[in-house]
Amino acid sequence: MDFAIPEELTALRQSFAAFLEREVRPLEEEYGREFWGEAPDRDRLGPIVRQVTQRSADEGFYAAYMPEEAGGQGLSVLGTTLLVEDAARSGMRLAMAVIAPPNPAGPSPLLLKLPHHLWDDYVYPVVAGKKTMCFALTEPEAGSDAQSIRTKAVREGDEWVITGHKHYITNGEHADFAIVFAVTDAEKRAAGGITAFVVPADQFRRGKLQWNISDWHPSELFFDGARVPADHVIGEVGMGFFEAMAFLNSGRAYIGAHALGLAEWSLDAAVDHAQKRTAFGKPLSKNQGVSFPLARSKADIEAIRWLVYHLAWRVDTEGDALAIMGDASITKFFATEHAYEIADRAVQVLGGMGIMREGPVERVLRHLRMLRVVEGASEVQLLVIARTLGL
Ligand SMILES: Cc1cc2nc3c(=O)[nH]c(=O)nc-3n(C[C@H](O)[C@H](O)[C@H](O)COP(=O)(O)OP(=O)(O)OC[C@H]3O[C@@H](n4cnc5c(N)ncnc54)[C@H](O)[C@@H]3O)c2cc1C
Image (cartoon, rainbow, N blue to C red; front, side):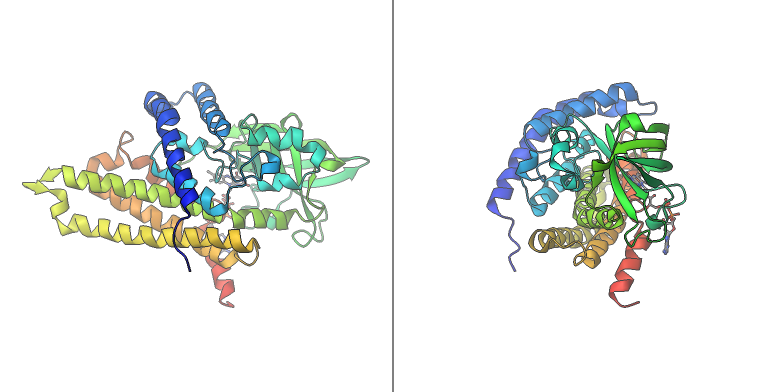
């Protein structure tokens, strides 16, 4: 076992950190508070997010994990994991937009399964940060139990006609196209009867924005007889559910890294506050009632770190989404649950500032609360882990 971070990845992290400070920090300081305040001006937010994404794409960070033939850098999962962690640890809200995973607005490796002649429309522009997409699986009647989706696709001549209603779709508001999962064989369903399609935005209707506890708000999408040519299928007809699960599994390292970075940011903020703030004639940190919870957070962070890096290493070396399923669920479950507890301890140490919108941790706590539900709630991860025990 070699636990050392390869030298080239350390160098990459340094240039990414310099990029964040040079390109993102000034915009964060100028616009950050305004955008996520009480009444964010979403018309102004969009262009700033796009600007940051574009700069990151120009410098090769945004979609670095996509293969070179698609315009990416072919960066390993471990390398991408480290950048995702560093973006979150920077504490900058706009840093969410500079690296594609785990944000589904960025290019999905699923797009690589489209026929090559469609890459000009659906692959290269997303890798270059010029278009965004969304991943539309969840429906009002099908969340955790994703195989019970009702959206259906029927073949008519050279086209597929898609009818259904998706909700809670991140970046549904802006996406230029959607990856949509629909039933193509009602009897087979998950066992060969669900297909993934790429559907341009002129074929669907955007419903209401769904305001939630985090600062990133998904949307409803309606497919009222959306038509796409027969070649707009991702992978094979009927294999969409496997594609979706493989994608979500391989992405667990990124959501874990995201939680890790946010936990590190929260602990850094709490340690800083505990050292600087005095009460009863001494720094807060001199009370073990303050230092011990933070020491516990440090221990939790190291446990999350090694789960996340190990999962990334397994995806890089084995690449088999099914083989890593148990580890992927352990990582998603442990990272998001413990990162939430770490942020909650930080809130307590920060006192009133902990729960202020202008403070460093309030929005992180809200975001981490969201991560315990999305992309497979914690209980769904426990279901998978229990199965690995034969239960
Ligand atoms: C902010 C946000 C962004 C999202 N972005 C996307 C997106 O981009 N694309 C997309 O397709 N979806 C997206 N989702 C959907 C998300 O993945 C689902 O909300 C999630 O999978 C849970 O589904 P549900 O909300 O229908 O809850 P339900 O399936 O109704 O489950 C509710 C709760 O029941 C419990 N539960 C469920 N099943 C079991 C079980 N078998 N055993 C024990 N407990 C169980 C869990 O605690 C779960 O939280 C997003 C959701 C949110 C809130």
